[in-house]
Amino acid sequence: MAIKVKCQLLGTAIALASMKKSVRLAVKKAEEGVKEATMFLEGEVKESIAGNRIEPESVDTGQLLNSVTGVAKGEVGKVFSNVKHATYMEYGTSKVPARSHFRNSLKRNKTKIQKLIKDKVKEVQK
View 1 (cartoon, rainbow, N blue to C red):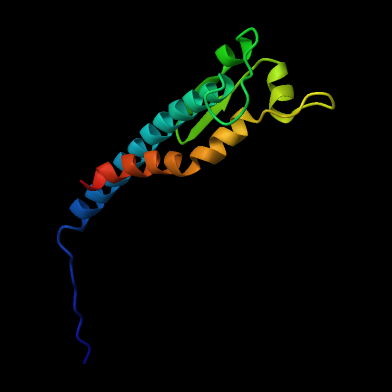
View 2 (view 1 turned 90 degrees about the horizontal axis):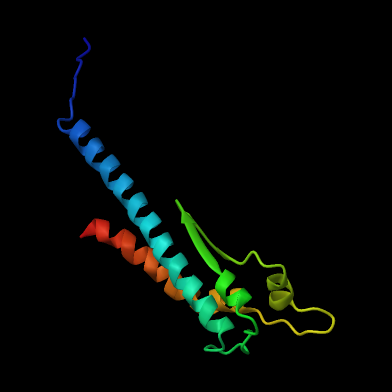
């Protein structure tokens, strides 16, 4: 003789809906953190170019400084310059030493950038 037992977990649909909502909110907060971190890094690169960090000042006409832009979309943030000589300044040439404003700013602030994003995501847990 076989006995059949049927179990039904009550509230699973509500729990799953709540979890999905929390995940959506965490993603939204992460995206906000990426935007905040991107704007922070943009400012740090500009400060570096202006000579307010360890790298030598790289302002002659102000074109490079004014061209630095930060763009955040979703989970990706980019800080860049679209002026031709930005690459030469960053990596140097056979005649001009590198002034790595972008790479050094990122390296110097990596922990802070990570913290900005983590802190935003932690807001979901509050």
